[in-house]
Amino acid sequence: MIDYVSLYAKRLAEDASLFRQQKMLIDSQIKASRQIFANRFGTGAEFKRNARRYLREMGLI
Amino acid sequence: MSGYVSIATGRTRGTEDIDVLVPLMSRDRFRQMFQDLQRAGFWCHQGDTPDKVFEYLQEGVSVRFAILDQMFPNAELIPVTEKRKTQRYELQHPQLMRIDDWTFKAAPIEFEILYTEKVLCGEKDLKDARHLRDFFKDILDAERFDEYSRII
View 1 (cartoon, rainbow over the protein chains, first blue to last red):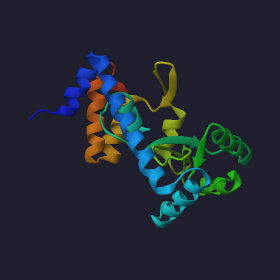
View 2: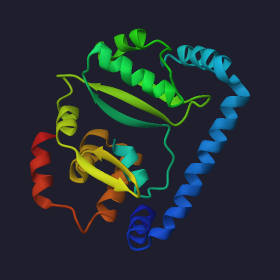
View 3: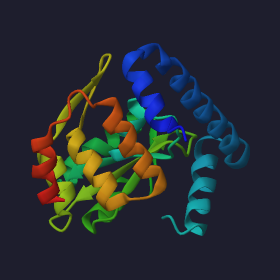
View 4: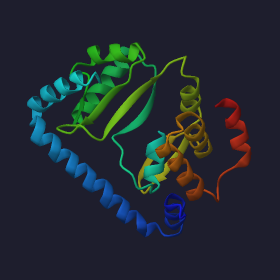
């Protein structure tokens, strides 16, 4: 069975250009997350108010 | 900063947060940092006033900062108290890491690997450790593994 974690780590160490894919993945995650929470909580003071209410309900603050 | 180090070196997985160890600090010092973060465009999950948020840290409870209008990713500031012996060691023995013009401090790679394998132990964590072992195989130091094994 191929260990993709090891395979990718070794390839990255040899070829730094593969980091471009990594950056695309992280950027897409951040963009999606930003949109989801903007849709749900709004922006500015409204965002903070709604976000904290959500965090309290989840027992996270 | 276990997850962050593996992701910063190419591990292909997402993360919701970055762990940041912070030493115990005075209220004034924390207020300064809090206001600097606000000016830089961050908000704190726990509140908008530094004095209120400082109480969390005094009780050894982490607080989180994220970019305005975002939840994730966020920085979890973990206060390093006397009880947190492993984190205290990490804080006192950092390794400087540089990615282009961004420099930050993390625990030595060998320490990160051992902590991930012995303490965190989840499937995701073990994959992170494997990634670090393979990516840094040319520079890992066996003596450091021995030394850190005794601490962890």
